[in-house]
Image (cartoon, rainbow, N blue to C red; front, side, top):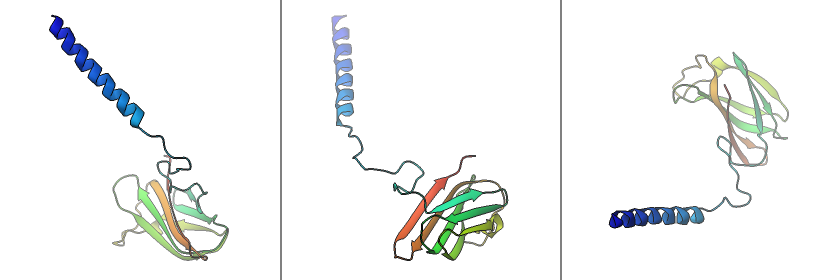
Length: 139
């Protein structure tokens, strides 16, 4: 009976020691680290503001400067397709309403309805900087 308790004591001790080593070795994120789930990983505010309506998406340039080569993306709540809409330029503080049917897959299939689960954008500002963001939508 004593050997059973010794074995149990050894197993429990090893388990607790390994747990303590693991807890002490896990490092906290470095100061200044950003990138919560579903964000672009930067601390600056989004450069494009999205308002999803039942039949359209309203986008507004919040970058404070004109943008070029703007690529807007929608991800549906089901499936893995990405629907895109491209804008050549978007002036500072400009707002545009884009019908959901204008968003198409790489194969040319239009948006078929439903609420997107995620919106995103990539663009180049006129200074030459590249911008990228994604934003999950709450249903």
